[in-house]
Length: 119
Image (cartoon, rainbow, N blue to C red; front, side, top):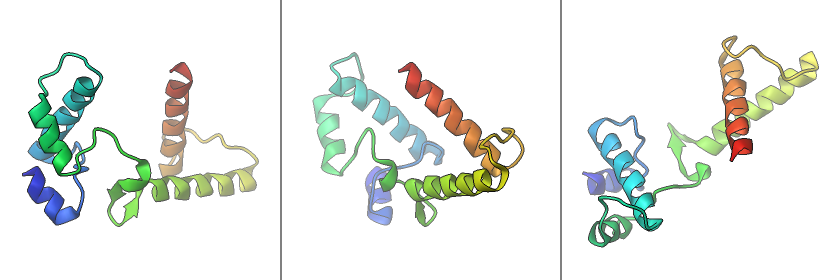
């Protein structure tokens, strides 16, 4: 099924929300990562080689992942520019989290920044 997905879309970056295949790929990413780190995993060398043979990666660059016809990097940059315009107009970057799409994006960035700082 993953091979068919790659043939259709040109990559094996199946979103976790894509039903049964998405859940399976999410599980494979997790076990592949553990296996590569030498930790306990149900992944075997043979399975890892099969996944690698079709270009499977347990992680990927945000610029490689598509949402619709745009990369996630493009979407992030568009939101960042929207925040820049908001700051120029209002003099601040504070938006209540639930106020609008931009507010939710800013809230998510705050959460991600905090997690990044915590390590």
